[in-house]
View (cartoon, rainbow, N blue to C red):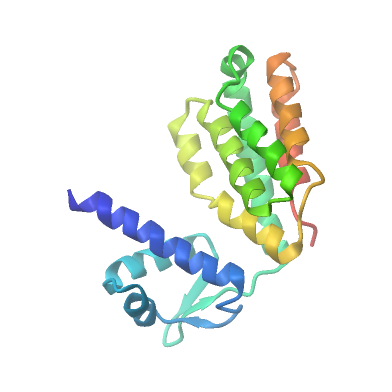
Length: 207
């Protein structure tokens, strides 16, 4: 019974640290002190350590002997690297999901509807949230749990947020681009997997 609570706590701590990095509370190269976060959030150091380890796997922070944990000095090139990997995964997912989504796109449609509203309000946070949710549902529709787990492990939401907030990477219309993907699945476009790949690569920041 304890494990889900610990997992939830680690997730909350991770989001707290990510938000601190994205907002500029911790600058690139600045040290993140595990004990200080634990005291601030009134938690033990164990879940803080787990959250930091997870963010190190995502290459958002780095640790070195006798120097502790620091925020990585990320460049546009670092942010760009993830997109070809993500595009390849989503291309495979689209191929596997195409028969299912040709029959039923209801898992994708609420996110497109939400994106039209987010575009109208120029709500960057909602644009990120619903864009990521759309692509997660696309990958989930592949029915391949290994593919979904691998995609999830890339930390798509974090990198998308960083691309937008740090580099100003923003599309004119998130909704229209995603509606075009839905339409391609509906009409059984034989190039739908390639279209998904091109769509993801088109979102990448430019170094």
